[in-house]
Length: 579
Image 1 (cartoon, rainbow, N blue to C red):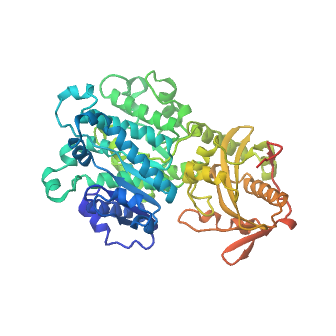
Image 2: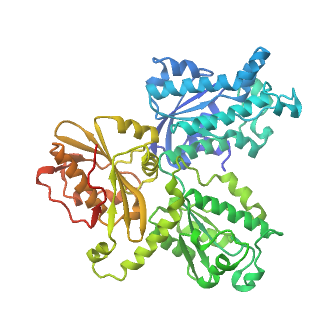
Image 3: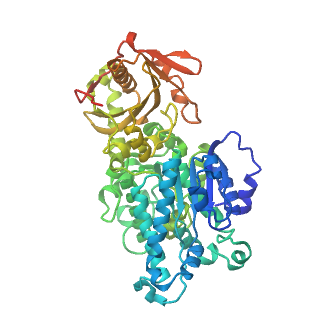
């Protein structure tokens, strides 16, 4: 993690080629150095965070005054920092009978702020929760006394989590956990606060900036999706090929406990939807033995999407994993106990994340906790099925090699697609796919659950969610299209994104056949598309050309009345699409 002086140096760099994001920063204490830290950290993530900072302690005026500078700035997202110290000042001035209502009243204020912003700007909020202050009035008994400040502060943090779960555009940056990591003395320095009104120490600013920009990155589709693991002395102690199954260190005793807890962490990541892969210098049958036979293993072969064990170069093997998963190297994390292997992978694949694991395996987890490698802006039920989906994809790839004719292979899959408008059941997955899809994404517009709900209610937008299943299994919801009615004759393809797992199966043709059919049935004569290039979506730069759209300036158009349906071996699962 960089220190503040290094983040400050970042501000001298050229931001012109980075993605610009307009951010408003509102705080009830001094935030000047936080602003510098956020902007400097943004550079490392590839963002030009164009930050407008409100004056000190002007949160309510900026939000509730429709003529304020906040609304003139019109940010894409707002960072709000209401500090524990200012909350304690408020508590100190209350009548004792009002102590009970501190958390409730603060939550009402937060709700009013959020609803006002949602109504006027419909933008996303990152809200910092409350680091603990124990004023030691009741000692440990404060945990049993509802009017104590400690009780109210902890209640407020809990209620904030409940609140955030209700509103997708309201996100919490957990600076209370950062205080646990940095310690109170690392978080807050009395002399600095007294003289400057700054409640965050310079030392902790990089941690808070990283936590904030992690959330921003996840909102804009930049986050890690895959964990690639070495095995010997990473997943267990010892070398399976030399020590044998009975002598590797794994279980509840000694250093084996550290490896077991490490495997539990990986298992939880897999259940959350992170793709788990293995890249090991080993004989494959020997490398698989602990997952199949060791009584203390937590991870099983079914938890691993791609398993590569051989004696080849690890960088080349990681490239093979990438080709199977079809995700970017910058979405991958590689863990290996060997410094030589780590450096080789870093040098050959610069965009992959390769943490510098501690020498002592007992420290692996505590170190990895501090890195927050797997931030996310969404979670859906389909995430838990992701490993099975990639394992199934490997079976499809194996089958394809037995066919010399691609059409025969596609026919053999017996593919079906359910097509529906966005609804309360598929909205979380559509939002997640919009945030995750970087490569097959024509305009790379990101949507939250709340954004999608608004589109669903609009008479000027028509939405399509596509699933795909075949004889090997169900891929779930893999594509979404949003059409915008420009006039009575033209439908603009506002959004078209698709999971790269289903490329080369004719889904593009099926989707176009579907939306052209809908356009014709509703009297629209023109489909109009646009490609907005990003650093990651070069693969679809010729998408509309390949589908026989005609170029007109910066757009692509297709006449629906002369369109001939394209070849597709996907069958519509539902017989009628109702809107």
